[in-house]
Amino acid sequence: MKNNIKITFLGTGHASATNCYNACFTLENQNDYFLVDSGGGNGILKQLKKANISISKIRWIFISHIHMDHLLGVLWIIRVSLPKYYKKIYEQPLYIMGNDEVIKVLRMICAELMPKDFLPLLDNKIIFITINEQRKYKILENEVYFFDINAKKVKQLGFNMYINLKSNTYKFTFIGDEPCYKNTEKFVNNSTWLIADAYSGGKTAKLNNPIKEHHHSTVEYTANISQKLNVKTLFLTHTLDNNLKNRKRLFTKYAKKIYNGNVIIPKDLETFCLNDLTTINNNSTLKIINKGE
Image (cartoon, rainbow, N blue to C red):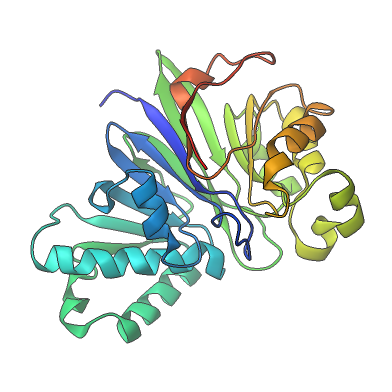
């Protein structure tokens, strides 16, 4: 399969965001999808519909940790998918991946809340995978390695995906919704693309100190790490939703004071083609496939 990787940000907001959806995204390669986190409710179904992504095309789902704004949406995907598998409308299995805490919670909730007739489909058509950090996984035809981000609140995993484009290999990195701590830097180093937490920036970050108070990062902190670790393109998500009109402009300004790479502050439902980002320099303008909301 030839790599033609697109990323769609289904949501960009923090846990209690109401003006945008909770932070989650899909990676697509040739109409197969990998969903990373799922938001906090059935809004995931609306976001997928708006993005024109059929649940039947989602092959893998990764839930980074057990917080509600990352995990609960996947239960709605399971609930919608089970009747489709039961009636043999869906055929290809759906793989749901997470650490041991995530899989334990999902199994428990499904056992209690899903219709009993559908439960035999779990681990048959909807397959739970407890991630082994020591092994390599193949997702969207690319090698993926998961790692512990050393989160302060609950166990949380990130991942590296190694994407082959134009006879070269590029590193895509996701580090969840806490700051990039020292032990995580080796996974971020020399990433072509990095998706990271930026709860707030500028005066708001200085006033509220989210790193100390919430274990969430700031624009400036993540920009500094990205500059230090030679990240080429930085996506900032999982942010406050109280100034969406100006968020893109302000966050870009804050980051560019520190970071020389390409800065992207996505809106909900914006889509980018990663193939176009491999040669981005500091003055390039990214092509947005879908402009979002």
